[in-house]
Amino acid sequence: GGVITMDPGYKNTGSCESAITFLDGEKGILRYRGYSIEELAEKADFLEVAYLLIFGELPTKEQNEKFHNDIKAQSVVDEDVKKILDAFPKSAHPMGVISSLTSALTAFNPSSVNVDSEADMYKSVVRLLGKFPVLVAWTLRKKEGLPLDYGDKNLGYVENILKMMFRQPNSEYVQNKILVDALDKLLILHADHEQNCSTSTVRIVGSSHAGLFASISAGISALWGPLHGGANQAVLEMLEAIKEDGGDTKKYMAKAKDKEDPFRLMGFGHRVYKNFDPRAKIIKRAADEVLGNLGVEDPILDIAKGLEKEALEDKYFVDRKLYPNVDFYSGIIYRGMGIPTDMFTVMFALGRLPGWIAQWREMRLRKEPIGRPRQVYTGATERSFVPIEKR
Ligand code: CMC
Image 1 (tube, rainbow, N blue to C red):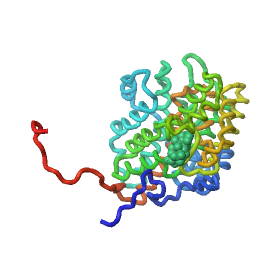
Image 2 (image 1 turned 90 degrees about the vertical axis):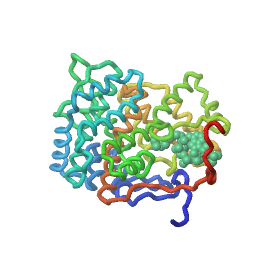
Image 3 (image 1 turned 180 degrees about the horizontal axis):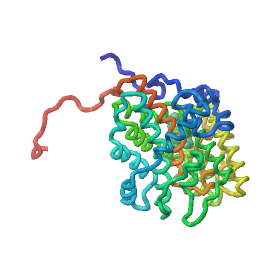
């Protein structure tokens, strides 16, 4: 009973208490478990950050090693999963493929749904952290017509991801430190962002006690949309279109401001950040650095910088407090690394995985009730059924 408070888009509704990520949108602060994103991006590696998010503290050397070993022990995927992958057309969007494959993991590990203890939960967590990168690599390799194989247990988590993605048949894979560092940083920056659309999805699906894999699969679907994680792909397509169009950024600025035109400046704006997105600041610097180190000169980067400069000086964007977000520059780095555009959002999912897991685990440990918002009904009042011949 009681009065229902309407808040479409949950702009001012808290759905839970959480001890994982702190975000101050006015000041542009983002911290995982109290550590600033700037410091973590600089000093930590992705697996440490995953541990931190999920378990609350940075791991000791021993904890880190055990965690990594447990993950590696789970990094083989049932060969039958390849048959599912085979059934997708090559043209399938990788986000659809990866969400299906993640969902399919439940079919191959039905016991993963029962998480009555922390030990059960841990099993599901390391399973997913082990298998998801394999699924990501396979999704890419299938698209590119490359053989589907496994990683290398002697490598670090992120090194292994790169090797699984890029290894060519009949040739030694040479690890490129620039790529490893860049990917580590990008994954850390994406690792959690409190109750965003995909994370809220993971928590709400998980709140019905659906298993971890089903909950994450739903989160991946939520992330796919261009207003959320899909923006990284959309940004690059937008920058490409501007380049093709002769680099006329003004024209696209005008389109973005035109309320009759559905076009939005992709990679701009954020529900919570109203001053700047701290992740975007780090990524912008990293884009310069990584492309410089790789010796890549990408005219798209100049278009992005030009567009950003114009938007930051434009009354429309200033009035609405619209700033570049995490997705604005990330795609330029992914592209420099040789990752195809339609895989960008999959890379986001790879980074967000520990955050989703941490939030799901927290929700289960706190025994949160099933998520079930209310509504205000605006439909027809009571009426009588009319037989089909009389309608
Ligand atoms: N280009 C042009 N106008 C914009 C944009 C944009 N990118 N973003 C917001 N606006 C305008 C919007 O039209 C509205 O104007 P008005 O007040 O005149 O009606 C005002 O700014 C407020 O926008 P809103 O849509 O009410 O804000 P929201 O909090 O509901 O949406 C958002 C946030 C991120 C969905 C939105 O800014 C957007 O669509 N941005 C482009 C897509 C994007 O880059 N998404 C990535 C988000 S960051 C990380 C992630 O989740 O992946």
